[in-house]
Image (tube, rainbow, N blue to C red; front, side, top):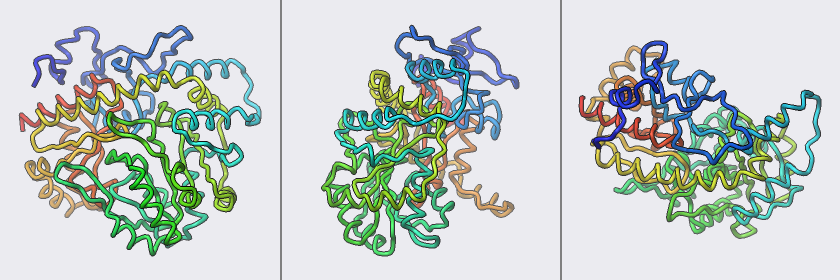
Amino acid sequence: MPSNALSRRTLLRSTGTSVLLGAAGAPALLNTGHASAQPSQSTPAIDFDEIYDRRGTDSSRWDGPIERYGPGIVAAMGVSDMDFRAAPCVTRALAERCAHENWGYIRRSDSYAEAVVAWNDSRYGVEIDPSTLVFTTGVHPGIVAALRTFSPPGTRVLMTTPTYDGFYGDLWFTRTVADDSEMVVDADGRYSIDFDDFERRAQRCNTFLLCNPQNPTGNHWSRDDLTRLGEICLKHRVVVLADEIHCDFVTRGSSYTPFATLDPEIVANSLTFNSGTKSFGLSAMRLGWYYSTNPDLLERVKANTRADLNPLALVAMRAALEEGAPWLDELIPYIDANHDFAATHIRDNLPGIRYAKAQGTYLAWLDVAEFAERIGAAETAARESAEAVYPVTPEAIVQRWFAERAGVFLNQGPWYGTGGAGHMRMNLASSRRIVELALNNMAEALAEA
């Protein structure tokens, strides 16, 4: 382990009085920021190395694992949101709107749609007719509206797996059934689509939930891959529902291809769902949108869409899209460097765990199968399942092992569907000091096992 590495033990020694103790005596994060802080208009460029303390703010990412495993959690690397301060333009716009102390009904002016259209044009080369843009209370309500439109209860929905766990919640809500087309993984941990299996399943499905980029594997699908998927879906009358919410996060050597830039005939068989919530850390704002070049598909989904939009969400998103590009352009290479750091650290210090650097997203998909076998996770899970109401998986044992021994919380691979066994998902959208702390703690726990 590097001599300057952070760990549960060295963190206290190296920071002295700049570290606070939690209520239960567990080491707290470096006291370099707090969620109640309000950056002013003169705030300098964001320091992404700052450890910004989100605990005690009802954060799903932090307070959820702490409630479950206790205050010893010092690196919550599960829920997919970011630990950085919001872009200053967002905080400033919200403060200015809050200064107007009236919260009556508002109209949604054209400026909100214009911000989305301009962003897509400048960032991705996607031209969106503003009349085809439909705002929703997040991406999920839009997908639910589309599933209700094209996939009656009891019918199958096609997905390439492992895939975003939230899709399964959408299927449960619409009473539809997952049809998992498990992807192929090579010896280096790289995933690819099994097109023969995909087409076989497409013949019995009405919709395909495309995750582009793929969460959790980190794939950025090529134009050829997307075209082949689109052709199969067109052939078998399967509507493509393209969730592209992670599109801004691309690692070096990779590129993002919007589904809406494919052949017009393929695009006309699709709807694209997106938001700036991932890119700008605005998940709690609950705002997304969808669009399509096919007026028939669009009108049918709109009939099932009900969006109760929060005025602060609109204000925050417009500010992010109009003024936040410089902030995001600094963040993207920082996240990419986090991926590089994690890949090297895992290779050198975490025997039994493998990570193939993602092409996109800020998520690391860890292969923990060998490690799980080493600690007897399958045997422990079997014993506990015998006395549990619900089955206990080996990955649940791995999650608990790292939470209790390293203070690190990871998400369980099976949550992401078929092909998720033997894996854990790690969120890298944090200060590199937190990423380092997490990996050092994991390495230290492994060495002591």
